[in-house]
Length: 550
Image (cartoon, rainbow, N blue to C red; front, side):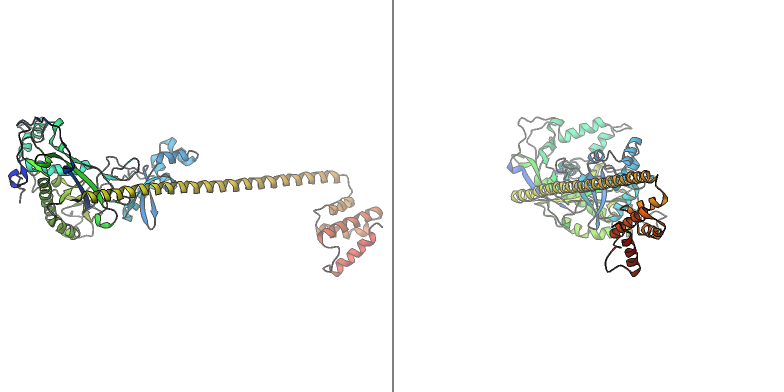
């Protein structure tokens, strides 16, 4: 059943304009916009399915490393510049930089970077297949895969993720345009010309919302939403086809589409952690907070909530019927049943349904009268799923008391501050640990160098002494040389026994010197006296004693 364009008269909360704008869309405002406490609308953001809102820049393997921690994988955003500066003396890294070899450099970075020091933030990766797939490309220097990951926007001071208010405002704007347009925008784009008429389209949008300086949507302001620590995950964005390919039919092969990089998503609200809080500001008018249009009824907050619920709930149910009742996607339909019940039981006074971020699909970002033409139905032929389990982007804004908002936001901000401090303390502790290790290594190296130098000096000393002895003995007879060698402090028992065997062949003074040398040597070797001497040794000692000078 085709979409029925929304008409302002279908909702009782629309109020007709008070003549503040001309029919041409130009502003006749005579008073500035007013935002008061009445237009302050705090909310709790309930994440029904993974939400991916990109930062506009992809992470390459030179921006992150993947580590296995506590049994699971974690992606660390890293300070690559500081790491490279600290590694300037590493030949392999310097060589890769000199060659401009980024494939090798990213491999070395994945292997060597100390995440404890250079991590700027960590994002869990629940799927081992996603982490291991990226690592396989990074660690293969011949792989030409970019191995990119798409992150959410982050605060430069705390590196914590946040949801841009502009994304929520954009999701709110689509149902408003859908309620106002009845084919005029399509007609404006094709004013009898074969090409897109940008000027005619801009004129129509100006008619609906006013000129750029007084644009009606300026009445709506949406804050950025800080995300507490652990509030995001890395998932794989899998595009699946509505109809399995002929090759996949009858097999276990999954019907797949265009490959997409892994991305960082908001954690589903019931997965634990702190709730997300934000706020809307709507211009305060005599009709209450809302949006004053130049040529259409005033949109109150209640009307705005109704527009969003009707627009997105219809598309949720159509996507369920079109895709998630198919056999190969039935598991997604089963997982979405609790979410469908949640949507069907929304509180019309306090809750607003939206679909935000990437992979929201054409149906949720296109107004009814502007639906793609020339194909059967409005829906495309593919869906993108987070880890093949759930579609992206479904959230509920649950409007809450100011007290809950301020208390909840304070808890989130305190958690971010605490995590930032803890991260910095951990980084410093890791740096101190490394410095202590390096100091210990330095001391051990110094001690080893000193010991080596001492050993070398002792070796040289022994060589000098040996040379001196050799020079002193050069003029001695063989008998005198044998006596002199046994008299040395390093003489061995074998040398002493050889000299003892020659005692009887020596005469006079030589025999007395030989006996004195044997006495000195045997005393040093423990062979001169004591109960431990053998009978033969005692006889040798007795003989030597008789030859000693009186």
